[in-house]
Length: 189
Image (spheres, rainbow, N blue to C red):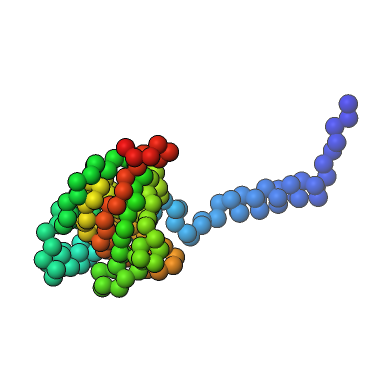
């Protein structure tokens, strides 16, 4: 077996490639190494910002309730509700089909939706995909009850609104009546 012999030019090329490779590899990158601390700091800023938004919204709701002198209960999630007429029907339970007559307004009094124009709202409690706060509130009612709900934006349509009439970050004020309760597919409970 014959071993190839390298001439001086080949040796020079090999040494130059090695030196260039070493020079490139040893250069200092002036940019600092990325860490997750900047992400954690941004997360904390976003959390503080959202907490500020929630505090502001809570204050607006409190001021609204005081202005109208409503005696409202507050749930652990932040929903406010007041039953101002007590019906004589059965209690709403998850899985029931609720028929609701309603008027929906913003805190500034602007009417957004109403069953007068949209018809009764049909909601399968716990499975309908409507505002979380509306479903939660309905589960505090009996058939025939009339109530007012104040639903914070985070229990309603949040940062996006409904992409139609409800603006982003809107607090909702429902005035409603739980007209009927049924077990889906079986008629009345």
